[in-house]
Length: 505
Ligand code: 6PG
Image 1 (cartoon, rainbow, N blue to C red):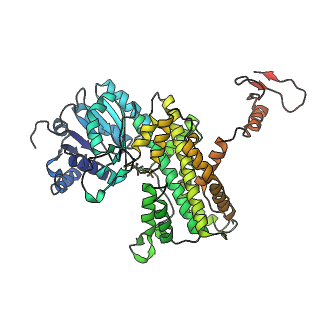
Image 2 (cartoon, rainbow, N blue to C red):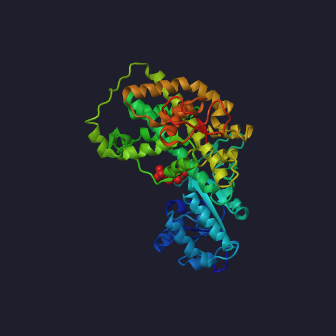
Image 3 (cartoon, helix red, strand yellow):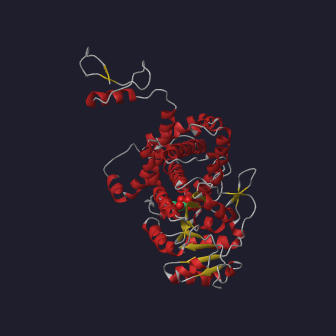
């Protein structure tokens, strides 16, 4: 590699996601300089790439940051895929002294959006550009087409856009169906790319975080569906796999349903007479993006209970030792099922779809509030479009969300869109039966239940908060508004003695 600047872009951080993103860019004809803090990882990667055409000529490794930066054409674009948090700050600190005015730093990690806001401001003050881009799709997505959610400097976006559009997942422009043939191992060049500039500073990372919040609920709902079939209907994993496979042919068609069918059908590599899923310990981990989403819903006052429940469900799962002990002490009603199995499976399908609509309604409500708080102008139709391919929550139903926001960009809640309203009307009877059956049998389905409570609460013109507000006034003189007065007038009475005058506060 000559010393003159000839690479189109650089990437720091060669864990699997970083390596695959480099190969993806190289596949699309870009020359990529790579650097890793631990040099052996960089050399091992570059050695491996020597056998991969056409990437071998397009990937250039550097041991020093100075040479790495010098090898990139101006304005230099450097992607960071390093450990989020302090790792990103440390990488920026060591990189910036080598960069020049107008150069661009892109953070492709799952950063907290407030960190991205801070970094964008700091880096802008130094005359450079910063972009925070969500990258979704796991290892395969990074390699053959992720969904990319960039935010930050719009000027920098002009430089980055051709590369991001080239490497992003692609969908059929008419149907929104992803073009996916990973097995072919060829870059996908046709179709609408799953990326778009989403807004300034932390907008891209915020949208990626909400994507993950929805991902958490989607996964939990699928797990509850599986659990009902396993516990209530006594079905075997391969039978449940067939159900998910079947569901994947209809409105539930999605990546998560597809991989669930694969997972359930998988035999234990140690003993092919059993299924691997039965040997996997029932404790779920998390890296924190679902928790961030839930914290943000609390901070912004958005009732996204299913999102929080999905996080709590993982926390509860982690209490394995306590749960095992409690199962010997706390007795439930005992599981009983006496209906028609096929019918009940279809009820679960409808409950899943209805709950999923609520999860997305919560995610989009959260983004509606966040854009006001952080001064963004998010385009929800575009966000749904970006999520149609490449990302973990990619699903046929995202096209319907795009349609909903195309029809009404000011939609107050996704559930109010005619398509989703009708779907909820159609599904609610089944949904209620499933939740009732789970409650009667003592099977925990927190996401199904909380989504239903959200639906019922949101469609209730009257809630019991009149009593709640009266309680607050009783013990804390927190005042109340009256149904027979205009909004914004607040009253207090000295409870509980009748006849005391009401005062306006
Ligand atoms: C994606 C995923 C990705 C990652 C999550 C997993 O969009 O590609 O969401 O970002 O798999 O960080 O999150 P948890 O470890 O919290 O489940």
